[in-house]
Image (cartoon, rainbow, N blue to C red; front, side, top):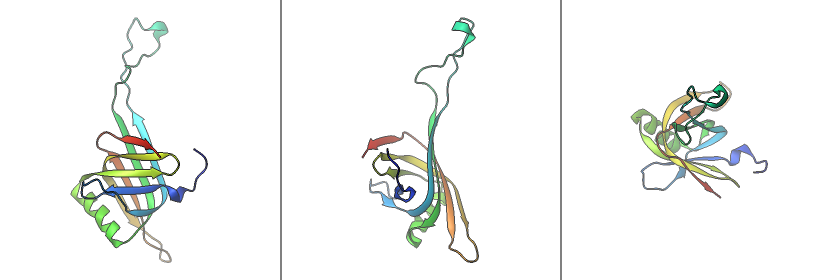
Length: 137
């Protein structure tokens, strides 16, 4: 993947569960990260006392974080309602010329702030709540 503008990365939500995604915010900074726990199966017979890990085991996770401005009042209301309800919804992150990451996430943090001479901004954090898929674009 070549260099791209950060604004081209889109965050979308399937508000109703019908499989239709809508862009919810003008994110100025975004991050998605993936992680996996390991299962240590090292024992006294491990070669050279080196740690051994169980292949294909462990809990996988993804987290999304971003900050910026909401697209409109309706988008703000949707995300706020999802947060306060503690709902798990399908979200999609589209990275142009790379792919789309999609799956269930729960909004775990939603913060608002702003300066006296600027716009209201927000920060959002989400944690995966099920299997995540990737589709190349």
